Image 1 (cartoon, rainbow, N blue to C red):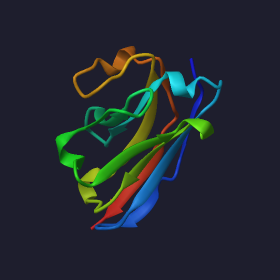
Image 2 (tube, helix red, strand yellow):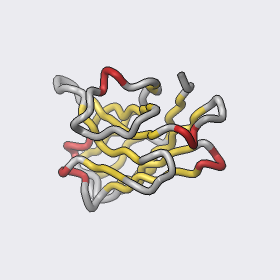
Image 3 (cartoon, helix red, strand yellow):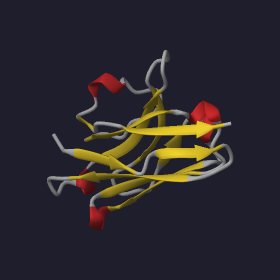
Image 4 (cartoon, rainbow, N blue to C red):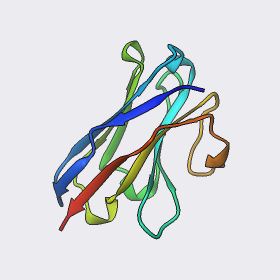
Length: 125
């Protein structure tokens, strides 16, 4: 398992932007698919975005397409989630995840190899 540490969460007004970062330890980041999930109070955890091991493929849930962008820097063992045009419904704890295989919203998230501790994103109206 990788140790994943998220950062970049915070409070922002609707329409604003935030960039989340997830740093992976262990030096194997480039061999892992990575992505983001989120969990809002009273709701199930849901897939947000993911990126393949070499960054050639990205996946997004419909509600964030065109607003969020996932990217990775293998030299820094870090994956990023740039979130623009944020909406109050984006408020949640965002979790970074990593796995040997690429994953998407159709994957069983309970089977993913590694998870971060989460970072809070709050969007005020």
